[in-house]
Length: 314
Image (cartoon, rainbow, N blue to C red; front, top):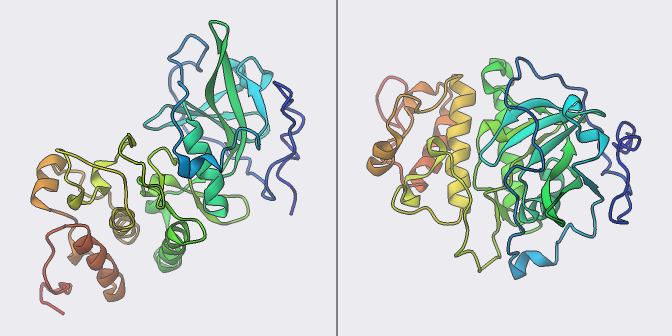
């Protein structure tokens, strides 16, 4: 396998005297977006991504001295070189020459958590800075480009293997070796990398499980994957393993049904009532038990016994 820098080294050059030593030992795909549309690429006059506080538990993992840096004036980021791939809670993601992605408004905390996550996460490659009013501000991140995971396209015969891969990935993230709660588990945040592995993106809502200083956590949430036990809308504190597992259960339900979960629900009302997906839609008994346990642990009002397809109990 290559180093993942074959298409990148000709486009990236050091800035602020920070050397580029290459990406991790993963290559990136030549993916095309379909029907991408959106606003013009970002410029220096947009809202700044202000420097945020880094918790003591995370500070030792700082990526500032471990990743190279380029500026928004680099030829890689000129408007004609950017193609909109999608938009998330924090901003747009663009495809750049060399088959890499550029995500705007990425905090240092998010990048540091991606690096801690290691093989569980999309590879961060390079910081992007913008000079505004004579000062340097963090603007975004260059990262590996990967293929979006569309659960509706998973063939029936492959669903169990995909489910097992998703579960293993989240369990690895929660393990003592990594120790991260993602905070926004959903199919959109699983990506298929060029080496064939499934990995997670969007660590904007993540935190270290060992971090006790999380009272200022301000991550976003996706309400259709939000555990009722989190207390939304009155409050929703830092994510836990239980929260991730609840969202994973909803994601697995979507993989096996091919349907978007809870799209017709008023989610504020549904969360207050503990309403969740219809377990009777799951044909496989083992999958139904898997989903049921995690929905129950997340505060959803599910029957004491896992319902069978005919409406009976088991």
